[in-house]
Length: 168
Length: 419
Ligand code: SF4
Image (cartoon, rainbow over all chains, first blue to last red; front, side):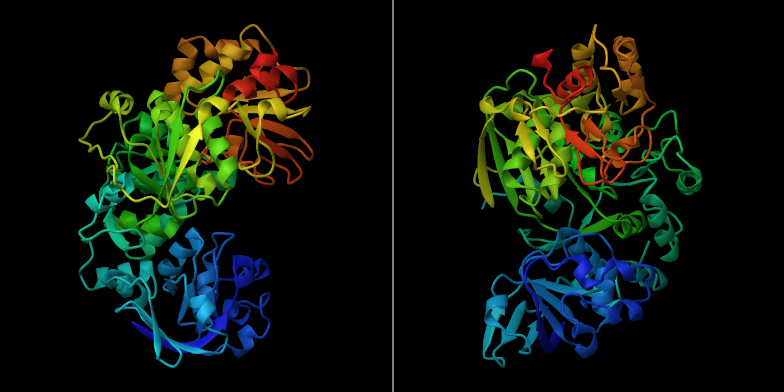
């Protein structure tokens, strides 16, 4: 799994209300959620975000409620992956379960600016910055988790596995 | 390099090699638990993914405890979904009203969770079972659906924080006070993602009830799990309940910890967590004058027989203050029956308490003791968030059963030594 994209940079404690405000929770339509993603943190985000862009954030990304709408909104906005110093525990689970790729990196935040481009190699466990001249190590994503993300989340992964006869 | 008990249990449940903290693993679960709030969503997801049979009908456990006996039509519908599913799947561990108790009190009591197990539950207080030396953590309904289907769940191997407790407990001080004290020190995110491992000479003297209370509240410090290595007390508890084999793990002496925190328990007095966070801890001697409207004794934190005994000891020959309500909810039918046998229920009734059938009830603001605007309740539960037991402008003070009982008698927040 390899992602190259432009960086959107956020600080610490981006909560689920910032990711998708509660006033939009009356729907779970990914397109609608995407149109309001991050709007309270940065109103230009939903308008300017491009497919493949990457979010880089500080500590405790996704804290707050357990709403699964948060990773759905980010994914539907076209974000290829989120790299944060740390994630709130429930957001962390929800992200994988909804098929959103996330990485933890203690050091990346300081070394990049909004608008920079970076490449993450989820197999090798490397992040390339400064036009590919510098790299940082990151925990690689194991094969089963990659499969889960590629099928669009935990339940679609299991449903696909059953259809192909590998499931129980 | 040595490993912690948490790492060892996770390693024993996965085929992946070289387990280390931060690694993502797919692991086999021994028990997958759901309740009347979370199981209906999981059941719908299970079906959507094409699920027909659960992976093991002895290992999927459904406990309708939150809004039972059904509070209203909506909760009756939720329970109907759970009941029908349990029936259709022939689940061994489904508990109907009359047998049902609060899940995290019921499972250890019935010997359903055992040392060395890997347990997930679609309920945040699933971490309670760490008291038995199991790895147990709360997950979402999607995770429960997947586990019902495959018998597996994914985890990130957590770092551990080691809490070393020394010294003898003072009078009226229990596991509840130790955990509120610790949360007060480290904060509600003080153990985020991590395992809280409790050791030290004090721990060896704690009853299972105390350990269950402490592991129960690990989540209130943000922890993934709380854990106690099994000792003679644990083995004595599980020996008479276990219907299958179990494995005892302990941390290696050279295991790596994110931090080691030493606690001198001799200085700890009964603790009260003031609104609206479990970390707002104060010693009972510095609570000031806080008049109360209600006292609620029960829940997966402190609704066990040991808790009822302490409350009855304080209430014996006394009665609840005028215009104050005391509600006692034994956590399981076995506890209820034992309390009857020991005359505790009579003591409660004599003191003018209301005693209810086992249920989560007002612990989560469900039913059986909801607070009105501006009312205050002392509760032996685990959360005092805004509106947790009723109106958003009501207040919950978390305490041990002795403090709760004394407060009921005095009509204000107070310790039993004031009686
Ligand atoms: S007693 Fe309270 S904390 Fe325990 S499971 Fe029930 S609602 Fe949750």
